[in-house]
Length: 280
Ligand SMILES: [Zn+2]
Image 1 (cartoon, rainbow, N blue to C red):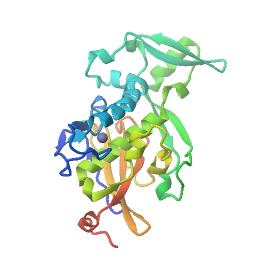
Image 2 (cartoon, rainbow, N blue to C red):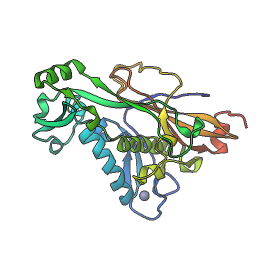
Image 3 (tube, rainbow, N blue to C red):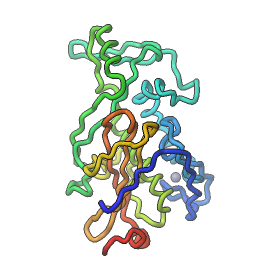
């Protein structure tokens, strides 16, 4: 890795891409909506203007809603990241495991423990580590947040937590792909990289998940500012006779040693290669 920029997430607005197309499907001549690069429900203030056509917006909204309102609800609730009251239901499910069988109890959000489940993917993206499309990387789900509170709650319920039910991996991987692609579109502009991620973002049956998304094996620099929510950056990486842009994402960076993902966004243009003084 030649260089790495870790930018703290704060309000930043990228201008519309000069190409005038949807950054996901390439459609021209439509009405485009702004893209929150990190979903606004995760507290991200990074915005790319006039980025997404209506049909792509609906697709990205669907998997982001799954991640935010189901998998990450408890954590967002306790961290005051929920802006709209209608997002807060009267009760939330607490998934339990009793004698090998899953069981769900419904409890008020206030009494739901503050926790977050995140997957560790145990391989770098297949594309840069000799893998092939369709190959599945091993993953481990880990609980972050107030695990003591979670344990106490579960002891009171007398059962074990079943985190398998608490995570939609496909939706999460597509959300990472969306963050990486829209971030690079804002940072470099669409003409400066050959996008690899749109198919994974737009097609829920796409098998490129572990080919383009994996763990980060480089530095694990923790946030220097305790107010940092997430970390996001990109680095050029050698791939055959080209350079590809690899986006590094660490969500909830302030909550302990959360996983760091690398996402291959695509080969960069010669102009970007020269701008970063990368050899041929
Ligand atoms: Zn589109």
